[in-house]
Image (cartoon, rainbow, N blue to C red; front, top):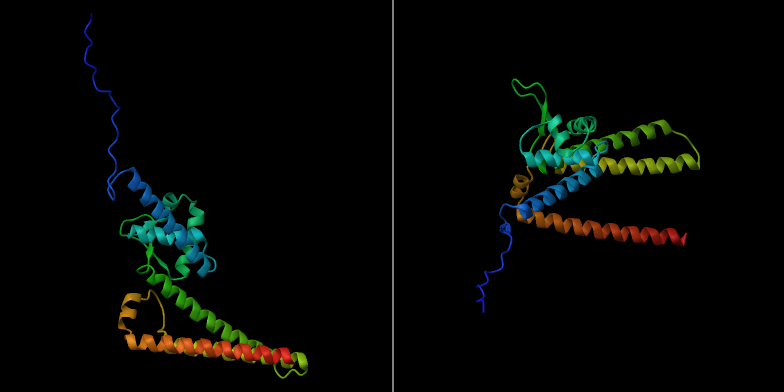
Length: 232
């Protein structure tokens, strides 16, 4: 009778080492890619919604410059974002005009590079406040110009138009005065952390309470006005 030979343990193919949590490896790379994609898409949507003439791609350029933390050329941004140079260039011009990025030419470099004008999101807040200030001033001038064109025209239609333009002009004058009192003249990034840190807590509480009272009063006046209109 032939003796059985001892069987060797079943051989298993070698398995790749599992990536440790938070360590390097495929899983970590996927998480980094997912986080980067989310930031690019989120910032792209935010800036496209806030600045006319700048598309989602322009916002993605901002996010790419923020993540890079160093200037990038148009070629590098085109390659990194997978978009044509013409699309990148159009958005770079819009971002530069909005005061969000700046163009640089390093010594000895053949091409321009681009960088954020300041920290993100401070640079976006500063650019948005600057745009808001310009919008208020433009609409203020528009209301006054329309009133001047209306002149002393008579009749129900002219009276109704004058009443609306007077109300519009009054509101934009109020907005402009409020911005001058509460906001500094903006030309560039706003250091949000420093600005917030300098505001005393008592002032923040007072502003919060005043805003709540103002909103409540506005709602009450709106409801009374609606009731009066329905009774006519």
